[in-house]
Structures are given as C-alpha cells and as structure tokens.
Image (tube, rainbow, N blue to C red; front, top):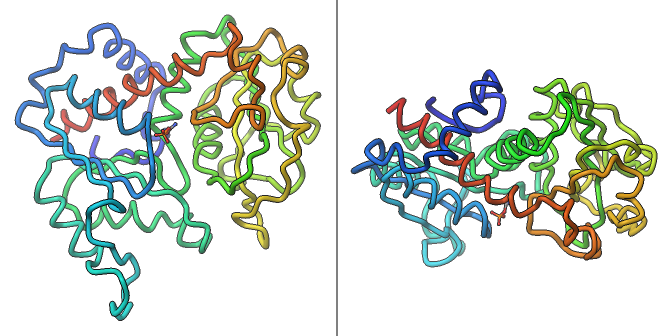
Length: 317
Ligand code: CP
C-alpha cells in the first residue's frame, strides 16, 4: 500500500479484518518493521484519539514519531497558489510539504473541511498536495471528505460485536451547536456500503449526504421508523452538504438526540459514536453510559486500524 485515503483501499474486507485481528492479537509482532523509520503526523486541526492511537500504533511497529501542530509553533502556512504573501502567512505549503517529507518516511495528515468552498473541500486540496509534493506515502488522519482510520475501526468493532451475519446498521444525524464536516458520515457510509449489511441513513430534510457516499443505503427521514429493529446505532452530526446551504447548521432539533426511548425501538442495539461527543445533544447520558454503548472499545480499535494500515504502508516501502 502506498497512500491510504479511503476505506475502499482496504480491498477484500475479509482479508482486511484478518490482518486487523492478527495485529490486535499480537501488537508487538512487527517491531522490527518500523525500526529506523519515522512517522510525521501533521495536524491542521485538534485531536485526541487520532493523535494518541496513531502514535501508539507507530510505536508498536517500532517507528520513531514526530508530531507537528501546524497552528501551534509552526509558521503560518499559505495553502492557495498565486497569493501575494504580504499577510500573516510566512511560508507556503508548497515549500513546507517537501521539507517535511525530507524528514520522514511516512506522513499522516489531518485536515478538516473548511466550509469556504465545497469544490476545495471535496477536491481534498490539502491532502492531495501532500500526496503530490511530499514524495512519501501519505495517509489520512481525517481529511475534508473522509475519515478512513475511524471507519476501519468502526467496522472492526461491528465485526467483533455483531450477533448476526447481516446486522441492521442505522446511521443517524443528531443535533450539535457547531457546523461539523461530513467526513465521518461519508466515510462510514462508504465502508458499510462495502458490506452486505442492511444499512439505513436517517436525518432531517436538508442534511442529505453526497450521493456517491449514500450509495445503496436506504435514506429514511423518520428517525423512529429507521431505528426499529436496528442492531447498531451510529450517531453523528454533520452540516448540510447540498447547495446553497453547504456547511450550514440548519437546525438543532433535539428530538433527534439518541435517548433511551429511541434505543428502546431497536433490537437492543449497540450505540456507537466516533467521539468526541456532546452529551445530551447527540446522545443522552444514560445511553452513552449504558452496557450497550461501545464507544470506548470503538475508540480503542483506532490503534488496531492505524497499526494495520501503517504496517501495510511499511511493507510497501
Ligand atoms: N474520532 C476522532 O477522530 O477523534 P479525535 O478528533 O479526537 O482524533
């Protein structure tokens, strides 16, 4: 594997899960693989899970790790070409990227959608510049349109907890006070569409995701109807995708919060969320604290997903 930007690059899911569970069983089996290899993790946005789990994964593989928070301590970076740099940005990404590439063997990049231009966001301008100019393998630690390491961890978790071969998975929009990217729901939809599970996406009118991510999922605007019989409830907020409302919060309808009453409609479903989560906006305290909540093992599997992908990248060096 050279670059990893989408769960579609996992290929055969059975093989991908087998590799992940081998990593989970024996996390230190490949310590020699990363010896004298350096991972550079570059964050344009905040992170808790991605930062810690990817660093842990790299250390399990024997790698050295450098972390750069672009917005704290580095020169402010210009990302647009053709700009007269007479403002507060001292360095252009087009010099910074190859310099960063010269210090490492593998690069992880976190760069959220900015909601300034759908074209720029959905063109993955930042991530693609790293791929084009760093000269090194690049993997996404959440980009504008996808969060593949999260989705792989979600899918590993579902594989561990599912009680039937074809569980019903419901991804539900839930309210949030800020505009959040579509990367997690897009990516989750992309991943679940690679399975033969029953898949329903539910959200209020106006929050339709891009059709290429919705794929074969059934879209249901009645959340209660969608939740009936669910085996897994995957909650997430996202801002509007469709024009002219791209990147906007259209409402904060708290009747969409995942509560115990909502979960009672399901087939004793497991509750999932990528975290961080705003309690009593996205999900009630009692649901996230219930035995059916698997958000902690889901987050723990971020090490497994990152290590499985990093191992594949190292094997391809
Ligand atoms: N789920 C996730 O990516 O968490 P962080 O933003 O904390 O990395």
